[in-house]
Length: 89
Length: 452
Image (cartoon, rainbow over all chains, first blue to last red; front, side, top):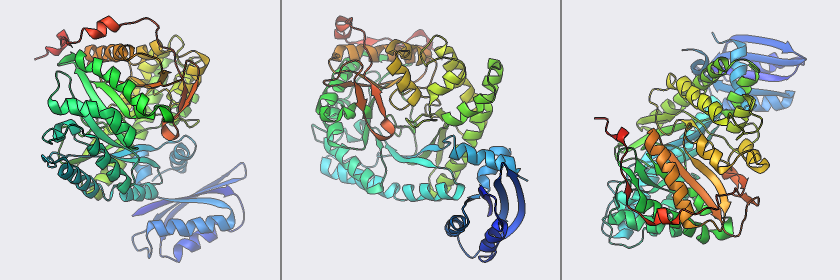
């Protein structure tokens, strides 16, 4: 399953590193990263593959939630399907 | 590849504009439950519901987490109880409602619909027993919803049933007087009731349905309002186009949830109900969409036209996004469940008569309206008859969910709590229709029923 990880928060050093590490440790493969900074706010989207992941999406959500709390950003992980159905026919 | 803006647009709709799937409703047939002994029948009903829907809440929560979209309600609708209880040797069907209530609590769902009778032409003994059981059933249960269909375009209007329902509404109000007549918030009187409606309080699993089905009600008034903020002052062509585009996006999510729920539960996918269902929360109001179009306060002249445009555009946009469309499909205008409607009723721009006009062009009818406690049963029957006539002639569903709150008068505030909201008591015409209601009989099926 492909997932979309979105990160929103105040920009600071190490956000990408922290989140990527948390995902790499459980074998979630990052396929694409896209980010921008608007009005000092950090917006990032990662597309990742959970095909070989060691944990479920639910557990990954908990894991990323903890990372988000630690570095003060909001992290959501969702199945890619919800975006595909809304924006692609 | 998805664009970053698209991803944030979806999440903004969810987080800021209250996009959600309003309900996953599992329809369950009780046709195999009948038994002459009502105790055995009730056990059969309880077992059937709790076994068929045992995974409903868990699967709903899993889908919610996986896709990151809230699914507000998980509910169950059953075969109209009057149909399946008729062979019981019992005078009252209250124990059936109590069994349904126990099943709802066991499953962890907030409402269960189908304590219903379909009497659009005449009543059978089972229908009569069910209707007579409604006040006590709604007073003694917490989660059971009841509905009665009293007319159709094909059959006309059963005015004997209309007369009776005015009195049933009053009895229900009196038996739940200590809770602002909340029993009436769980009782809908329909014309042209649909068999696959996922929304409460009027949901039941029609007799033409299969053993079970998953029906989905989508929502998203906040998302439509937000989209219209971007086209301020532009022509109504652009407004309609914007609503269509937004409705398409909302409904695609409903379709995804329906497909997943159906697959994971192993239950047939029924329909998507293309609805704009408000809640009392700020930013989740249908009235505010109409006001965004340029109406100063909902109910002002122009409201009916604005609502007609909205209702039609929601259907056109949603239709292409859903595999099967059904249910009530359209904009809902429940007064107590919509912050904009509540404000409009409080400031006096919205009246019962204007609401009646609005029901000609939108999804259902006079919904969740508190009226003075001293309103007579005959007047309530006459209001039901008016709504049924609109439904019958326009070949659409109409419904009445009026709450005559004992001891309350015009302007008093009534609190139902949660999704049912709160509202001011609205004025009802002081002129009587008692002699019209006393006549009884049937209003014949209209000319437009002869379509064969």
